[in-house]
Length: 109
Length: 122
Image: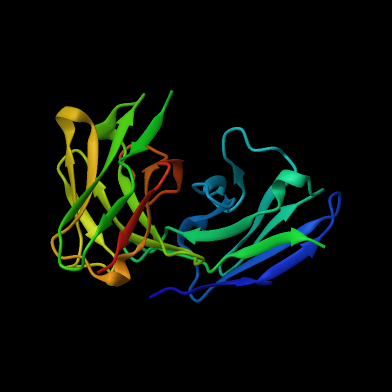
């Protein structure tokens, strides 16, 4: 099965700083079927990015996704207070073996 | 408004059965697959399985195959996740989520239910 690895496990930053989150897959992702979700404590996840680089509806442009093959990145250009959360990558290109990464927590420095 | 509303928290004993619901509204229910996701307390997200509401065709993760069953009732636009015999290890939050594109088994999830907490304890 495809395995997703996210790094770092925790990212400690201040508001206004740039956040760079990595997601690596054990096999090449078909058609860039890679998504990113944000989850805050006590809430359901929210879709940020799909197709590796397409922003979901209503997502601010400070969020961007890039990458292909086995290496993907989520960048938050300038962190705002509401961005401190856990971020998961998810691949959906090896049906039906679909999987989430373990998550990266972005917290206050 | 497109939304998924899940049933409330449950407290069960090991060996009991349970059916959690996910009521869809604001869109054509049969046109979007539904996925279920588990999240144990303090842990990450796990994909459990998905179902096509058009014909109830479903796929399961190997981790959940044989232990849970997905179903839908198109007449009331509701998806279900059920267990016939719960274990203490089933204690978790469970989310339903809509596949973004129509008739797309391989897709990201754009709408999520609020989650249902299931506690299994003797």
